[in-house]
Length: 356
Ligand SMILES: C[S@@+](CC[C@H](N)C(=O)[O-])C[C@H]1O[C@@H](n2cnc3c(N)ncnc32)[C@H](O)[C@@H]1O
Image (cartoon, rainbow, N blue to C red; front, side, top):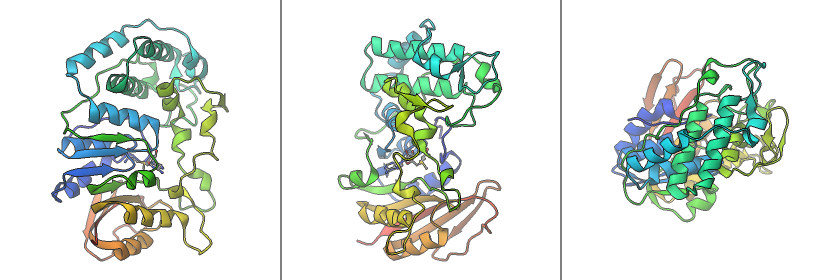
């Protein structure tokens, strides 16, 4: 199954085949992807023929999901739009001022000037010709994918490389995103997951929450999606915000803003981890027969704690552990004998059937 997406912290690209194998066996029709991020999992669910409810709190994820899950015109229609946008003449604007660098400089900017000038021109053109709805989402998705392929970063935008990456020299080119036929009735949301759970029902809920860090001494190592991908927000909103710091981040992406309960490293008054309570709440509040939970061994909550919590909330049907470095997969039933001895980061998939 072919999906596409930007470089994204926590993307499940590598474990898509495992998610597909587990989800395909349940007879589910409607599937919720509660933290859709790059939307690779949502795209796969849609290609598997499920009706997909895709949700994430971030505006870029909403844009990608709208393009991949809700597109409603023939591909030739989108091809015309993309060809038109590729033909616009470069111009120097807000994005070039803040994010473009000359090839003779020492880098430390996310893109070369020729590409930010293309970005400035394309972004203005999208508004000038009045694109809206799925047309706009497809155009913005195409623009962001094109930029992601010529970036000068390690995959996020809170710092930029000194010197220029080889790919940053390429001329960016917009392409029609990989749009596949989809079921009627897909929905896209941009909500806090707990607000969404109150109003949705599905057969299978897939949850891939932010993991936070299990290192008490370095809580700042937590992934801040807003800080990492501020530039995608600015491109989508085209709101020319106040920026700060060396990376020219949006004012509203400062670290202390938009913290997530899933990343919280503190304990509550009763002594239990706030992140753990949030995971339990997810399981309890999901209106779904099956819950598939992704988690990482580097996350705030340990696998044993998670295992214990899930066993107390329903019937644990499957646990899959993948060591992404060795690609070893272990599968277990109701026994917590782990393959990983703690040396590498593992990804876990827990399949739970909720008790009626
Ligand atoms: C580990 S990533 C998901 C990655 C995704 N499965 C993929 O393959 O790209 C976690 C996501 O949770 C989102 N998020 C964080 N807090 C949230 C909340 N309270 N409600 C909904 N989404 C949230 C973040 O924006 C981020 O995209």
